[in-house]
Amino acid sequence: MAGFFERLKAGLAKTRERLLRAIPWGADPEAVLEELEVALLAADVGLSATEELLQEVRASGRRDLKEAVKEKLVQMLEPDERRATLRKLGFNPTRPRPVEPQGHVVLVVGVNGVGKTTTLAKLGRYYQALGKKVLLCAGDTFRAAGSAQLAEWGKRLGLPVIQGAEGADPAALAFDAAQARRARGYDLLLVDTAGRLHTKQGLMEELKKVKRAIAKADPGEPGEVWLVLDAVTGQNGLEQAKRFHEALGLTGVIVTKLDGTAKGGVLVPIVRTLKVPIRFIGVGEGPDDLQPFDPEAFVEALLEA
Ligand SMILES: Nc1nc2c(ncn2[C@@H]2O[C@H](COP(=O)(O)OP(=O)(O)OP(=O)(O)O)[C@@H](O)[C@H]2O)c(=O)[nH]1
Ligand SMILES: [Mg+2]
Image (cartoon, rainbow, N blue to C red):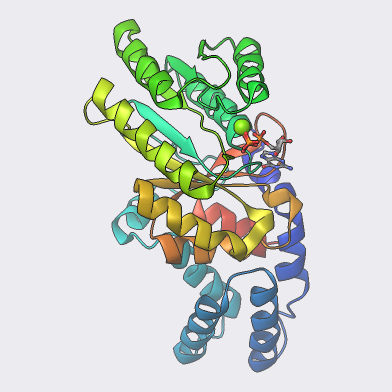
């Protein structure tokens, strides 16, 4: 994990520019707060979160504005007090804690092009490095290329991939993969899914079916359902995220392509809207650019020189 924090900073350069450089931290407090408001809105932190933050910081009367803002942002990014406290005890910005999934099957969902397949491969590499025996399932049977793309990654990483024919029923494939995981004694099965179907309604119904098939093959699974969101779409992705949550009961979110946008503040409205933790963030296309999400490190990378 060498260079974790440097990569995070580099990956957040565009949002960082917006927040760190635009704000005259040393100036008169009211002037700082005015500039801060504009910068937070521009970074897609959202209206309600921005107003709440400014109001609390003003009301606190604190003179160390930057510290006050950092604390509030961290709290907004990790509303679970208990987890936040636990993490604080062992906080080290250069070495985040590993993300331990519940159960043995992770279902990865999201609309087309957000980065599901590459993220799945990176997750495979991440858990492989943590010593887990990982199996991949190329559940995007809608496009032959989707399956081939994951198979290629599997070869590169030395991870087995369960594949079906183009047009195969993704629920049947996921069922087979979940059974194979148990039979062959793998620790973790990562299931990719299609992002595109003929209709959006069709996609949700199909994903529900995939989830049920996994539960049939392995009761209690999938332990995790992670939604991949593309940061470049910013707050526009929120409505869509809500629909996924209603249909599937998300347990985590992965935000990709933070390197490609100045709207990195969108993590705040994501957490506020869904009340689901962010597990990983994508800060580049390289294999190590998928990072475990650490709120303190994230805020530090945005606001510290
Ligand atoms: N810059 C950048 N690019 C990323 C990141 N994550 C994924 N990508 C790129 O996004 C593109 C789409 O990735 P895919 O993994 O194919 O997306 P998908 O969601 O599986 O797409 P469909 O299967 O078509 O729905 C690829 O070129 C990835 O390299 C990231 O964090 N930063
Ligand atoms: Mg894909």
